[in-house]
Length: 262
Image 1 (cartoon, rainbow, N blue to C red):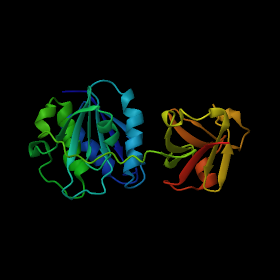
Image 2: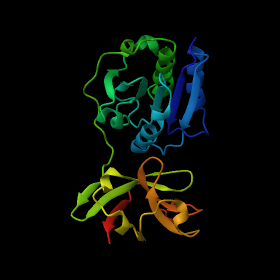
Image 3: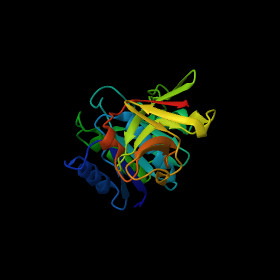
Image 4: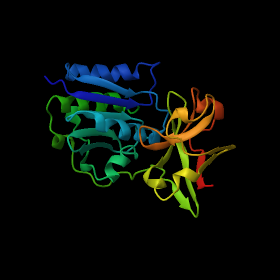
């Protein structure tokens, strides 16, 4: 029996039995599997949010880890379920763009369409493929089923849906894509996007809010003041020192963020 790591990322929340059901399936097949919850608090149907969480977290896991993500507005339709082998790790998710980052970066050296019904539960619900297909497949992989046994190679997968920022003359325009537990608002703008800008002259505008000067840490401003800085994931964030920028500003995901030199 294997003690491989299987991670879970979903929009199921923790109030219902969905997550526990998937864990029960995994442990019934692979009793020594080490199940790690990345998060179950992805906002419902927010595929991009799940994509950014997985892409910034999973590279830190050991070789041989299996990463399963279920944010699946198309469950029960003819959309495919994918298995992607990235170096020494495997990703399992619906074919809806969730694994777009991995595929676009060329890390997906091999992509297979999950079709081997011998690895599914005997009864497959049209509304819970996470429990009935992805969970048992992850567990069988942990127990030694080969990647090639999952199904045929697949090349017609859904493209990356990550909303990359755009440059318009002197303005870099992105958007808010994630709110973390502390209320920091992560944007889709990374360091590479800003490499041609003078970091000493930057101004951020988002909704009714303007913030001048890129900060290096939260302590660069006074308590209760807004700031913007690069977070640990490498993306630009709007924050409130010792408070929640999300609660203060109440900007929804998708709110436009503009960066200019002042």
